[in-house]
Image 1 (cartoon, rainbow, N blue to C red):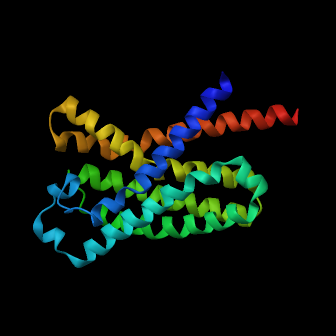
Image 2 (tube, helix red, strand yellow):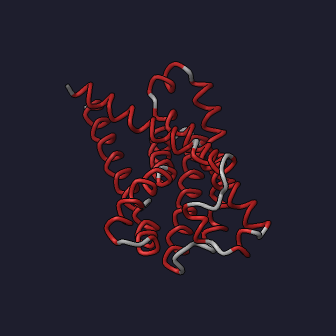
Length: 211
């Protein structure tokens, strides 16, 4: 029973990561004036720098989400070390570009100051935890690397949780802006708490094994 629950959670986690990771493709298939972009004024939508940053954020962020979940597969880490390392390098590059682009477009966030701060902080934390994960593995601190990667992907996974929370909050509040003001924080802060408890559980397992 426990094994079935574990497999179900892993399937849901990977499926959501893949689906939302591929989501940016929709911007190249249909008219992009939908969802969040419908709340942006035409002047911003015509701004070249903003557009480069927007597409850099969603495309590379989507790539990070699409490939990042595989890094938590013990089978890949154990049996395909070179693949794990190459995916890790690609993830770091994707986070660097997407995070910097995300920080820039956060300055124009819908909802005003609250979301400017919220999304800016999420970009900073994403970049920082990813850098610390990279530095720790370079120093051969494997467990620390794993923990920082959990934090990094928790922020990355906010692309998924935002799309889960937003329609729920719109139903509750009755309007987009109020819902978006909440989701600017709700999409990523609880993810970090979840990551913290996952790390605590991992540490307990290690302590039991080392006894």
